[in-house]
Length: 381
Image (cartoon, rainbow, N blue to C red):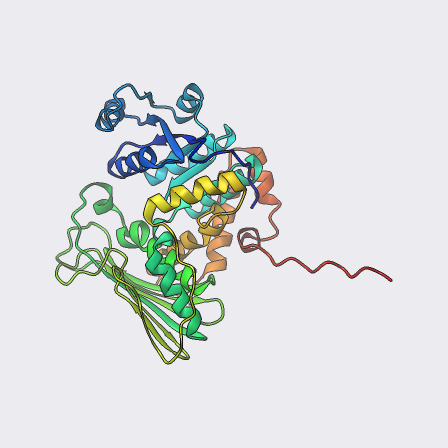
């Protein structure tokens, strides 16, 4: 997707307001402050005291703070916004920013529902501003190396992830109906799309809550996705599994026609195949620092980054398909989930220009996935 460019870089840092002064907000504030290509010009939070404490913690007690993102951006001359609020606030804050002429880098998920994500994709089209979702694991150099190994294995039959952790978060996560699927699994689902280079077709998922779990909702799940081309992606995870915990990235195995590739999530992946791996490029950066650098580069050059809202939406579609399957006990087609979200997006949309953009989509998947361009017609003799 095309978007407006902004001259920015180390010699002309992008002026940024960060919205959200919670735990993840602190990480973003530190990252934006440390990056040579960005300048932190303000902090937004409904709790102004929390915003002021964050500013003081950065050694900048006079940094402007406010409770309205667009208003503070206007007051400070900000050129972009980093949205680190709770998921339910992602849609209203990002929409307001885009139509105020502010590109947005947002924490995952893009919105709290797939329907609202479709609205944000259309809002990005109408406003001409970039909305990028920070799927921070996409920038992991080891994940890039694993993707290169998959390319050596020929056709891929199965890709699997095991994820077993036992965090005691407190707060909203422990009250969610499907905390693992909704708050965490999107990282693995998005990485699976990146590794396989294809999108999902269907999902079958069972979610459950072990009797010792400290979560109100189902903190464990097993899901199988059929992917385009026939490969299967299997995810097995739990957020209440103490002992022998996996990496936060999970542990991965890919099985292909020429062999297998393994990754423990923390160290270099291993290729187990009788092939000679080719030299392939790796991500030069990682984590949210990588997402921020990619965001700035895209604003400077006009390139489309990984995590741009249209590209990222299929990862959230995998989450909604898995949740729907867990609720119904049935295999769920991802296109059905997309169509249901599209109907809801049209019903809920309050902006006529965004609704018009949604109405003009040829299909939901067709609007989200770049279509191959036809070759130019041959010149007549």
